[in-house]
Image (cartoon, rainbow, N blue to C red; front, side, top):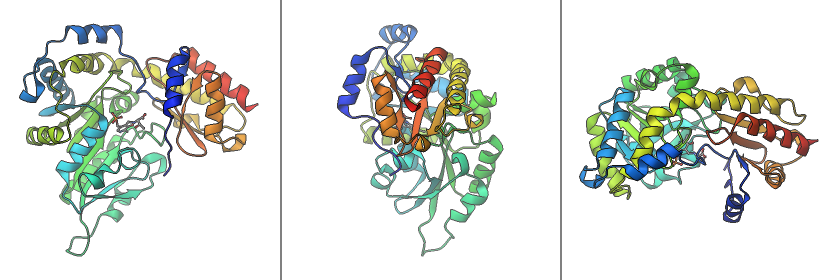
Length: 361
Ligand code: TLP
C-alpha cells in the first residue's frame, strides 16, 4: 500500500471549521462558482434514466463534440467511469496492464477484481510514464495456459507521479501497437484537460487513438460532481446499462450537469493559472533544506515532494502544517502531495511555502 487515507473524519470536520485554510489536499475540494450555482438553480431537468434530462443530454453532446467522438455518458465519479470502461473492455479472468501507482490500482477499491474479475499487471514507469517497449514485455503470450491481456490503461496526467504528462507520440505508439494485437486502450484522463493545457493542444488531438476516455468535471474544472466517459456510440450505449447496474442512474441529474457544462466549456482556459501556481509552490519548496523536489518536472497542478531529509515523516509534517492552516495529503511515509486549483491563489501558494519553511527550520 503506497498511500494512506488523507484524513480522518474528525480531521475533516476540523477542516470545515477552520475557515481560512489553504487547502492543497486535492483539486476536488473546490466549491462551485456563483455562475455554476445559478446554472444549477435554473437547470431544465427530466428523468435521465429515461434519457429525458435535456441538460444531461446537452452535457453529453458537448463532451462528445469536444473530444471528436460519437457519444459520451455522464457518471457520478471518475471511479465509476473507469470501472464501467474496464467492465466493457474485459472478460473475467483477464489481465489489465497499468502503471504501478495507477488510480485504478490504489484508489478504486479493488474494483477491477471485484466487479470485472481481472487482475492488474503493473509496470513502474519513470515519472509514471509507460512506453510500448515496457508494456510489450507484460502482454501475455497467446495460448490457453495464460490469462490473456484484456486491456491497457494509461493515466494522463499521472496523479501520484506528480501530475506528469505522457507525451502524445508515446500514447499513440501504445494505442497503435495494442490495436495491432486486438487489445483495447483506456485513458484515465481525470486531468486530461491539464495535460492538454500544458501541451497547448486540444483534448481531441491528444486522445484520438484511445478506445475510451474518462475525464473528470470535478477536479481542476471545478464542478461539484461528475465525470464523463467518452467513446463510440455502441460502447456508450452499453455503458448506460453498466452505470445503472452500479447504481449510477441519477434521475434529475441536470442540476449537476448544468455545473458540468460550465466546467467543460469555461474552465479549461484557466488551468494555466493553476499550473503557474504549482510552479511557484515547487520552486519555493526546492529552496527549503530537506525538501526533495525537482521543480522542472512540475508541469501541471500536482506537486509531490519528499520530506525524508527533514527528519519528519510526511504525516508529522502535515500535522504541523495543519496547525498553521495549510493542508496537504499523504502519499506514503516520505511523500506529500499538494494540488493547486481555482480556490487557491498565487499568494496562498507563497504562504504555504513560507509555512513549510518555518516548520522545517
Ligand atoms: N483522485 C482523488 C483521490 O481519489 C486520490 C484525488 O484527490 O486526486 N483517476 C484519477 C487519476 C484520479 O486522480 C481520481 C481521483 C479518479 C480517477 C477518481 O475520481 P473520483 O474521485 O471522482 O472517483
